[in-house]
Image (tube, rainbow, N blue to C red; front, side):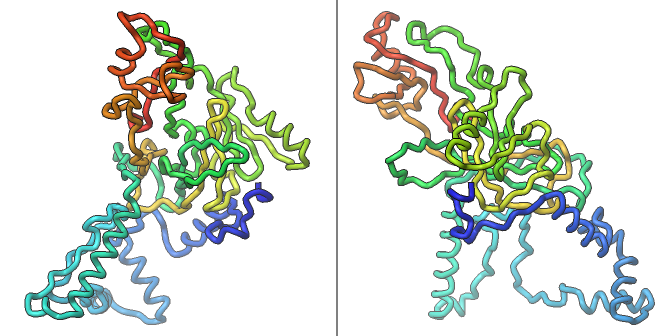
Length: 385
């Protein structure tokens, strides 16, 4: 993989990180400072904290002297009248209104410096909002039970991109578009990531229904084609939860061996935890399913669980954000969202062609009978996921 996508040409890609070793060392390092179970809860650790401070300062104070010292050195002493209220940064990416400006006094509103400063701040806020205009931020903390230990578990953030189709000799002018951002625990399996990924191809109907579009089709492609793999650092992790699943990576490994590429390793997706992986932040890996539906996946963040995170195991994996992609509209009326897709349709200039419910039936059927030759399948738009 590195021979194709070279790391030295990408400054945003990190070195390889063994997740288990890295966070074990990190947890051990911060445990020497104090217990991580009550990070953010100062009341339960006041005495221990005071003792540590006095030990570092090589001094001894009584409780009253320590209280006076704490009040004197408190950050509250830095407050001034008219200061903006404290900002809740629990959801950092809720950009609008996050950093509210203090009110400009009327006497200073005519100053040219104040006018220019206000304009610059407005431009900064506008750019910040545009940065996240293609994402819808979600909250998935439905359960409030605190059964996860702060400082012991770590979180893995994975960005999943829309599927792409590469054709040799054709240049793709559109860059990859992020479909969703998923947060998982380090002790969860790769299958937990796969089950959380939303893709319209999983909901497609594999049978052709042009002869009888009213038939009740309940079997989706995800029920028929359950195989898939995740490719991370020269290893193919295949899903074998169903006995009928195939190893999609076999033909790839055979082709690679014939072209002096590799060697590549294999693994079992449902038996591999994230903490057992060695990954690079910012480096593209691959998730493939439904035969040839390929997604780029990128590890964007790794960090220890914090008190501000959800501490319930049932809330993971969670979807942090999804793409606000536009819907696919009917190619006939261009008004309603598409519900059908046809192939090899002789009576339309597009192949494939998308139809809304009304246009599909009124254009392709007369008194319920099929007109012309075409293949039809129900279409599930990505905005409906």
